[in-house]
Image 1 (cartoon, rainbow, N blue to C red):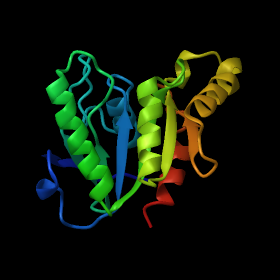
Image 2: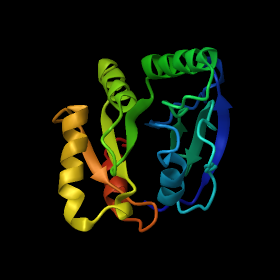
Image 3: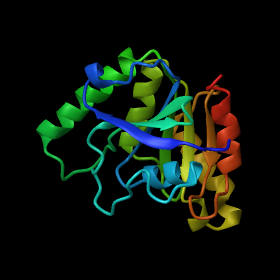
Image 4: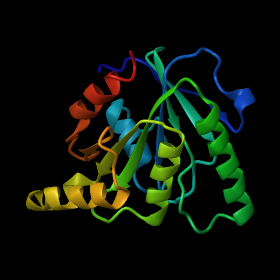
Length: 194
């Protein structure tokens, strides 16, 4: 997909603030520091539309990105970051639950995991949470360039087994460094944007 327009429209904390134009939405979820911003920036060929940060826990709102006046990427707060207060985490939890349970324009959630490591308990919990709300999931196993090519199948199998991935969901290995997987991701996403 050629992205001619990509801009942040709103950082929302509640349903009242969500965009009203009824475009399809693709949510992006993942642990803090897993590479969500790099993934967004690589997909849309921008250096820093989504701010990358060395400080985990930076995204604290639902960030709606208008892509080509056709759909939204919705970046949700990263999870699993210990330095955030319990109160703050509860606030995020409510905000995310409201979004995932009520948003009928949400077509798919992209769950980003690090291919180098076994998915965490938080990753499994997030996947189960999405399945509970019957939301289709595409798992992106990022940082592909950081593992030897001959280990790719083993690492992917570990992701699939740990998440107990449903047969209707897919996993795509991806590298923000080399763009590997980018075309595959766009062709997968386009099925949800019709």
